Each structure stands twice: as structure tokens, then as C-alpha cells.
Length: 263
Image (cartoon, rainbow, N blue to C red; front, side):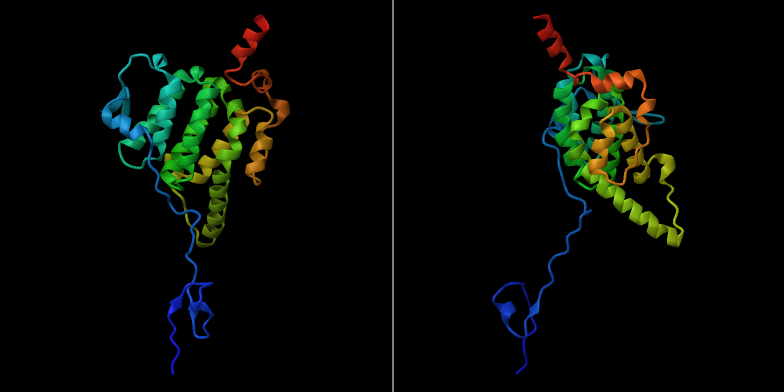
């Protein structure tokens, strides 16, 4: 009598039979792309509630705003909504979300406080954990622009959120270093640097920007999440403005302290 060699799941009653063939566990890919959709951005854009649209020009595409002065917009309301759209991969949602965030930070970064910053962390983290290279690059560019916004005053406010944003960046950094060591053996060349598509270089630039504008505690917090990162800036070379940014109260609490002292 021949034994049946059907595949049986592990730790089941059939697996105790002498001729049972145990099924291999499913393979888990740590860098497989996860699907993620925005909660509010896509619906608001399709409904026409966002004050922007796509403008086609000779050299590409831009975001056309319905208002003349972007500073008059409610940044505390619109910036988290645009950040929520970063996890979209289809056109034009991803382009509108990415370019909208960059325009808002560039023209109205002085209106970003700790409350607005805290609302952006969860969408940024959700976008990073999609493991999508296109979304990952957009999040890195947004972090660079955000850290250097308001003359570097926002960078210190990002430091408490490093433990939520940097672990996935560290995972991609280690993976890229492993790939580079393998590519050296077969002489591969990456041509994405000229278009800022080189993910490894973007990660290094982002970490350097976070350390530059994050103050004196930035390197310690980066090192905690990215153990292979080395300090690039000498604390003794900090300017007076950077030292003042690191010492002063967090963004948004300065007015509270002034009110309390006045009363």
C-alpha cells in the first residue's frame, strides 16, 4: 500500500501521519508594495472642493490655484488633506497632492504650527509604509521641504516624530546598501541620479537635512532609528539662528508662553 503524499498544513492532525508532506509557510516579503488609498483627498478633489487644478504648460505641468495669494488659505485644514493624498498612485491624484504640499510649504511655511505638523505625521507614515518607490521619493522630498521651511524653524518640531518616520527609511537604506554591494560585482550603473530618482541619494539628503535643521538633538534621534548614520555636522559649527531654534520653545507654544508671562 502506497502512502499518500498530499501537502498538508503544518501543526494539523494530518501532519502527524508518517507519510504526510508538510506545506511550506507562505513567503512574506518585507518590501512588497502595499495598497493604500487616501481617506479624504480623492473624494474632495473629485467633488471640486480643493482650490486647485492642473495647468498644462510647455515645460510640463503645474498646479493652478484658484486663489491669488496662497497664504490666505487655511493651512491647518488643507495641508493635512494634501498629505493624505500622497499614498495615491494614479494620475492626477498623486501629482496634485505632492505639488500642492510643496507649494503650500514654500509660500506659507510660516503658518505651520505644531498642531498642523502633528496632523501630517500619520499620512506621511502611511505613505512610507506602502513600500512604493514613487510614493517613497515623494515623501522624502516633502520631508526635505518641510524641515527647511520657515528658515529651518519647522525642523526642530519634526524631531519628536523621528521614531515614527525613520524606521522604514532605515529599512530601505539597508536594502539599497546591500544592492549596491551586489551591483559592484556585476558593474551595474544607476542612471537615476540626474533626475533625482536615486532612492539612496534621496535618503542621504533627507537625513542630512533633518540633522541640519533639527537642532542639537536631531542626530541622537536619527541615530536611534538609523544606526548606520554618521554625524555630518559639527555642533560647534552651528550658527546663532540654529542654536536659538534648538533652545526656543516648540512652534505654536511661543504665543502661549508670551500670554502666560503677560498675565
